[in-house]
Image (cartoon, rainbow, N blue to C red):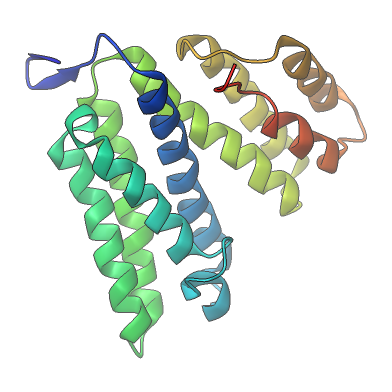
Length: 203
């Protein structure tokens, strides 16, 4: 790993670390979008149930697990925002005013994304995190019945990001996803199926 102007420059990414970067992006987005969707109508079981794979606390723990292994790759300052988010969600579990701490979780995840974009020099590494975020957002928006144009916008961003990552992907799946995005009916379950099958790590 080389350092240039205070930025992290990663010239070689292992398959394992590429996959961790991808899931760091996905899990951080799952926390961010998930919490933003319920912050106005707080649902404790959704946010703070550690046994629920769809909860914010579960997803944040998975993001932390990936981030701590990638600490050298993403940098200590970037990693610190994931740590701060974990600290705030743990405070939310014990607080009589959990929404205050959950808003701080959202803020820290947003700061993590900004710092990652600013600090990680290697375009592929940055792109993998962003691709993970885009895939997760398309998935969540489709499941949550978000506005049609919001889903289409996120699919366009995903398509733009894909070649910048260096990851292997299924070209036929991508073609089907593009067709679904252009279909007037916007079949949401099919979009979820295709976006989940897009990236191929194990081949």
